[in-house]
Length: 162
Length: 344
Image (cartoon, rainbow over all chains, first blue to last red; front, top):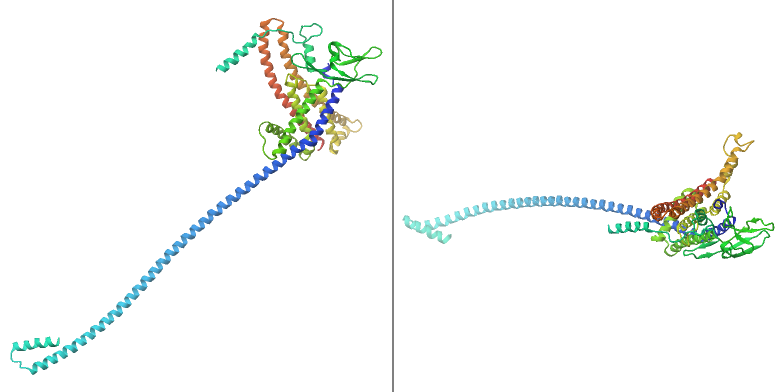
């Protein structure tokens, strides 16, 4: 059974060739391949890590932006509300002041009108007195025989003095 | 549909095959098919490499006779039973088709044979191919560095990844860098030799990994590596295992078993690869030979046998392709595990 008995020469050559192959590949080729594969794996790992970090950062930034935006909106609302309130306040105040002022002016106007009225009355009374006195003087000075002439005279006097 | 019909018709065309010429050059009876002869020439080693069409590459015969004299000549000088410098090819017996010589008393003996045989050349081709495969990948890495390889190089890389990352690193951990190159070389050499053996014509066709000398050398490498790199724990386990004292003291029963297991591991490696590959070749060969054996019964039988044989050998070859891969993987994986056990 020659198939089942090892042949010394063949074992020898096999060992020689295989060991040479092993020496050459083991020294120059496989280390290069293994190194490169490991470096690449590390590189990819780092890349993935970096991406994950970036993703996380991005998420964070997004959340930040969202909260900032919400804050800003809230602030805006607040300010608007405040403004509204202030406006209302100012308006109220202005109205109040205006009303007050108007009242004051009205009051003083009323007062001066009252005074003027009193003055005018006094004046009128004085004038009327004077007129009556003058008229009476002239009437007395003339002949006031007839009623007609009396009236005529009164008219005339009124026209003269009025 | 038309394509399928064409296939079926072409396949049935095999039925029309009829013998035109004898297949093997039987030595006892020219023209008659000799199964034993065919199997042994195809599975064994030879001093020349037959090419399709009857030509052959004659390889050098290097032998040393009993007097310590080295002889080196072309194997073509031994053709057809010719004798050269006292050497000739034995006809039968255990040394059939090997170079033998006669000493002074006329006894036939086997000289020290360092001939470059068909298998040696095939080993060389397998090694070159292994180197080529590894260099292709290394060259790609040098040029493109971190770029992912595609197609062929990508396939090589996935194999390297499968062997190194999935097995060697997983099993050996921090020792992976030290033993990785050996295991990778082992895997690729066995795989490529297995595949080359499946190609019928010249660069392939040699039964390299189905040859016990080759698997012996490979197993020897693993054996030496395992025992050289073995640590204290390994040797303690071997010679002073953790068993009751009476099992190891007056009569070293357990140490004996342990030492035996140290030897059986590489032997199992050797036999497994050898038997699997030899079996694959044997089945393919027998299925084809069946055509010629049954062909003697007439053309119709032969036609039928051709169809069945080809179907079967196709099936067996596909299976063998799988086995070629699995055996390379198993040899590498077991070597890894043995190294790991020795370095615990």
